[in-house]
Length: 358
Ligand SMILES: [Ca+2]
Ligand SMILES: [Ca+2]
Image (tube, rainbow, N blue to C red; front, side):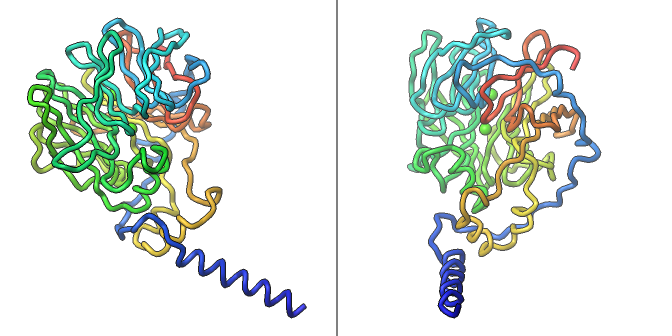
């Protein structure tokens, strides 16, 4: 009996030492998570996504972002590097494979598809499917996590680099690197600009906790950027300079941002906020302990579909939700010329299409 008690005691001591001292790759920074108003007011629950139809992705998954091509087809980035294209009724077919992890995609005024590839860098895909790397570094620092982008009418490309700390390629997946960056909250995300005329890349803004969705306003006077770890949206003058927060205290983790045909913006909330992670925002020690827990015990995304439409000043115009989580981890949306929404996701094996009138 005493031997058993000793043995259990030893296990508890070793377990406690592991939870307190085992080395982890994050160096958490104390911050104060903003209040979470939850799903009330502008964010009150609805079932606006209940009528989603789907395009099957032929065994692929994770249509992270989509755009409508000059040919009218829907182009989408998928989890294993392939960029697919499809009519609104399917079937989807493989167009190209970047060899990396394409996240944000956007057609430029030149008909070229520009891609923020988290593993490879900022890339261009010509109409005949030729791939070209545009940039993977700035000011002598590697761009570790290109995420979302938009292209101005002068051809210059604005894009986010989510983290200077955690490389999507080095961590083996975009999800692994994003979790490390969000738990650490060292806020090293940046807004960058690539100029195809000079081939140069410059830094327009720094200090974002996982810089993610990015879209230019219709008049191209400003860049709107989603800060996933700060649950908020920023607006920067087009040439950089001081940004201002125009929407804050979001009830979830915002991902992509796309400008819709009417000049408004669509963002996806990939998951509701996590109460435990918010409560631990001021405790770097406890956040380090969380990283030592088995994966099954770590905070994970909650399945709840959520799209938000805003204007260029950050005012919420509409939300479309799926409380059942049938189509979840929604990253964002783009709209077809007839007004239907194309809804994208980090993990789903299909692309969502929202019929007219919804
Ligand atoms: Ca996009
Ligand atoms: Ca994204």
